[in-house]
Length: 312
Length: 253
Figure: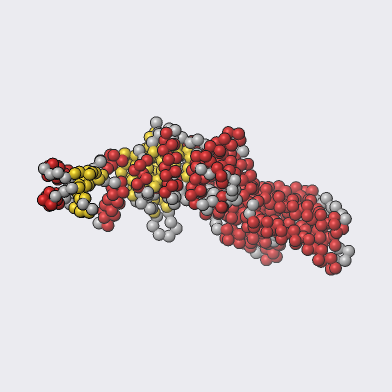
């Protein structure tokens, strides 16, 4: 089943003075049930605008979108989604427990069931000890955790998160990533935007890249990066001078340190040649590591390519 | 039910606001201070205490309606707390109505505290208990209901300072709308008369709710006038809430 279907969705911000801004430009995208979909793009690409349109905070200028087969302008799909906005903010004078009760009541969850759910959510996000403190005393990381808890209060089928990893320390980021993975295990669909790319590589099934409001690429990470080997790093030891000069001539980079030789090779053909050279000697191979193209490199390539095109 | 959830939450959040405590404290001091005027009020002490009591409910109620009312929506949008609410299965009118009722409950609580305090002061100073005072207070509350709707209406599209200024302006002109008609008739100009009639119908006619003088001086009030004022207050509020919903419905956040 398709969890999110977006067709030609466009948002134009009209300004009183000056040019109108096209934040999202004829976006067409679909997200399958049960997958973690990463929505990537530089700042101002239109990620937040798209998520806000899906959750009813913004009205699209044109185009349509469906969540769990119901059109977004209806109230029905909102019952099955959880939403965490970017830099969330909550009522300062309430405690986290009161806040979750409030959100639960909006969904019409009966009091007893709500209490149990809230306890399990506090355990999930690790806020049990501070649940009765007022929110104005919370740190940024704690606010993000309560934000995640509120997005799960209704046991949603689809969770939409806008930059859930931003502003968190490494432990916080790991915790959030673990939560996202556990949601997938429960069969939920996760649709989140981010610009922290190394995290995306570890958890996303598919990604979509949005630049200037347009969807530039969409697909699984393997498809996008095509497992392209960029370079191969070889580490050797116990090498004699003659062999060293031979391998050096075949390498893009050669560093000798602590009686070890670190080689960077830029083609697989040269690797084969180096292997043949090494076989003739008594030298020891410590490691051969292929360096794959990272998402970050792919992403910056796309953005700069688009920038150059715009300049022309 | 969702309206009630929003209303109770608005009440809980606003009742913990320090600004509110400050205003209530001031009003209590103000009512108590009517005792200071005792030497100037030979024989009229009862009337002065009642007068000051009603005036303070009206004045401090106005301050709360404007200060909290104009910030109510603006802060939700500015601080983005609205994001996690509008994205839930809730209609926008339910949110707006809930916010309005929540604030009205806050004002009602403050009015009740002040009323109890007035009765206590009256009992301690003059050993009297006057039930008719409650009628005056009810009409002050009705006026506050309209003012809260005005501040909520402006806060659907404007900043708190702007909405506050306009609401205060409307409060003062609202007590003079009948005079506008009288002045217009004196000018004997047809255009001025038409324009003043339009203004008279658009602006809130708050003098309808001002029965403080009659209550303090025990002047009898006509039931027809009281019923007219009651229905005017309710209809004017509904009209403003409808306009607010129309604007709020179209907003992007």
